[in-house]
Length: 356
Image 1 (cartoon, rainbow, N blue to C red):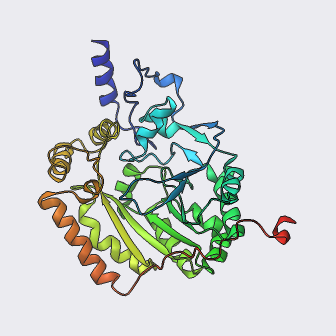
Image 2 (cartoon, one colour):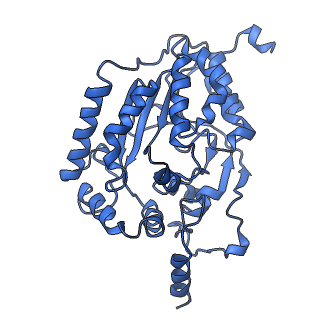
Image 3 (spheres, rainbow, N blue to C red):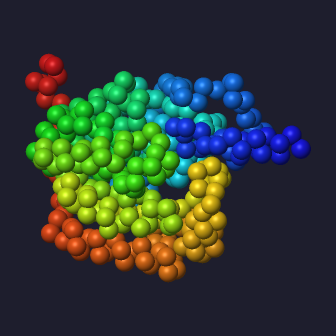
């Protein structure tokens, strides 16, 4: 009875400003769960927890992902996207995929040292490393800690190719390093932009950069010779699916050289977080959105099978695929991003660089 009353109170309290998850959800690894009272948590101030991993570069074994390695200087993400596929990974650390994912951020201050140690391995066969394979390397705390910047400096010195995925215009801070790397075809930036509608953006990804700032970032990066790939991720039917053509047109005008997209999928503990988010922000269309997602996912809200998880099925999924094909043909037919250069890797810093 008490749990039901608390549920009613939470549903009636309205959306929490600057937050994607409305509350914590059950951690599948915990026998018991604990939901703090409002007075116990300052929702506006994330907690940053320093951790000390032994490695920072992870080998990616998923056969349907176009990356061999990833590196994530942060676990958890302040950006607060309710649909984020990385939320369940927070549960492995004893935290929660809901509010904890956005408010208990693990930071790896030793990441630069670990990266350099990895690059010095004699057994390492050079391949592009993706920054933000899991959570955003340019989330707000990076402005203060500068862990990503230190890692980029090492990659520049070793001539290590890097792909960067981000939702934050903070990446412009490091344009000096990125432009030098781009001169040798050592870097590509993927900017994630799911919507141009600023009201929807504030709700979908409350602590990311606004669409106008992302567009400006694309323009400035491109002007500096840095190739930019744009991801419309995720596409959610009945929310942002109508924006496919106008969004990619704007991205092309800003200078993007390639595009990609993904269909929303709500695996494991992402599902309750997203459903709660819909209840808080779009109660009038909640069932419509969920039913259309189910129509793309064989009657469920998630899909974990390799390759199938990116395809979707049914009429709505096919309309989305067709719209993206039209956008590519109309706005990006003469544009492409070449593979990154793996031939310049040094395996060590030069003596001159060590002096600095």
